[in-house]
Image 1 (cartoon, helix red, strand yellow):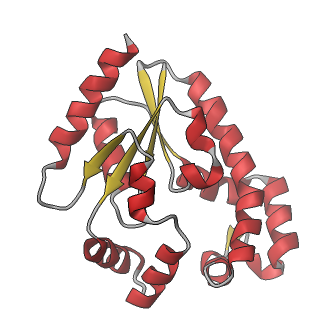
Image 2: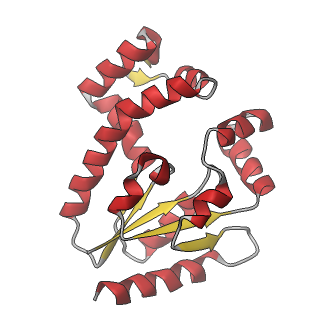
Image 3: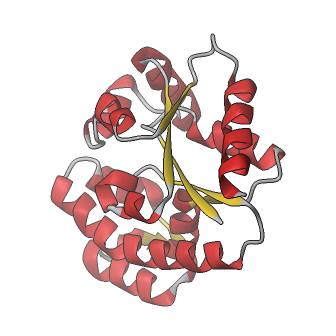
Length: 195
């Protein structure tokens, strides 16, 4: 079974691309969603996050996202600490999930493949890219945050051009080129490679 990594910077539209793969009956794991789920369900993670960031990290058993985001997007060391807590559990979950799938190939969607070194566990990496201004407007609209807040988050990520250069395939999500034909072409390619 082939393992395909799907990545892109904030606002690139990797989740939209992941949904297109799902339309083609491909099992897709959203690593960011898994991380969020584990941060609210895994007792040892909850304890570690509370120890690191204090009692305000959780409100009524739910992760206080705005509180955490306010800390980690202003402090690179705090972001590293959070990732050091959450990444190992997310990676372990993903590895187990992959072994349970029955398909020619699977897709793991994650923002931080190259940063975490987990790209090495994938057979191929697919990048999703979009023009900077489009990415900014998408995130402002989606997260209801300021342009400055989006740029601050972007500054914490690997530069888009650097990330795309590391990928085997790149999908253009610029609202000019059609997305579905690009994904279908890759889908057909991965099916043929998996035989």
